[in-house]
Image 1 (cartoon, rainbow, N blue to C red):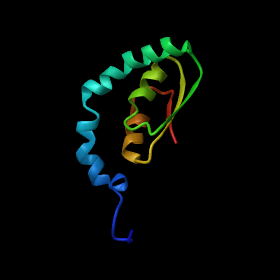
Image 2: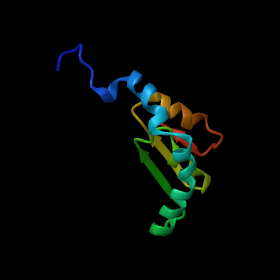
Image 3: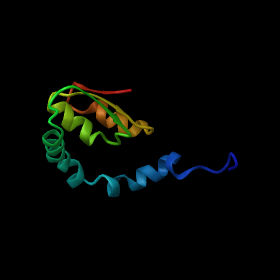
Image 4: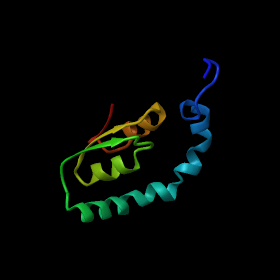
Length: 94
């Protein structure tokens, strides 16, 4: 691959265009009930969570609201800004 070529996943323009299709509000809203199912399935209701490739932080925020200490990591800074600016002070982005 030459320096002038860019992998699709490193192209911020791609993510800006694809964001609303990949993360519609219905999908983000569903995270809370999905986290409840995960907690029930795993019988784990406290602790620390490392959310790799967290995207807009839908699971990070839902887990933090349940009392988990969450660290979300994503390649795209735009996704991390959304997590860091959410109203939940226990969500951190690194």
